[in-house]
Image (cartoon, rainbow, N blue to C red; front, side, top):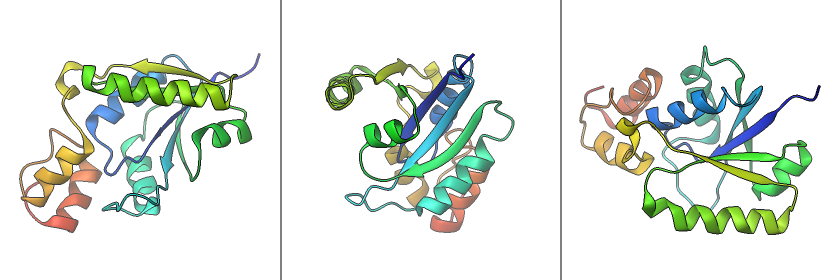
Length: 163
């Protein structure tokens, strides 16, 4: 029987508890979930790809079936190269819907064998974004309810302030 593999792509700058919630739940549907960090040249991240990979590794310890990788370029090419047919995307609110549908339809146009499934995070994470976490961290505020402990520590080193 072939392994059921999915990819959960994103910038994860930084990874949040909402991301971890999606990863945990995706692992209940798939034998393996590859959390793929996008090296996006159009963004200026606070963490390097290597730092994000390491923070993800630390944050997903104990989640059976989850592993991390990175890619640049188009997701459909990464999926084709790695023989993955399903992408997992998080949908927090209606505001995400239009963008995510555009992306899913574009990806399916580029690769008709690709499917996108959407998972909603738990209610505590519906309005949590990496942008919000970066903003909170830049002001030295408490982060422990928003991000895993290794990420809170890394953000504190970057910005100073509470964990």
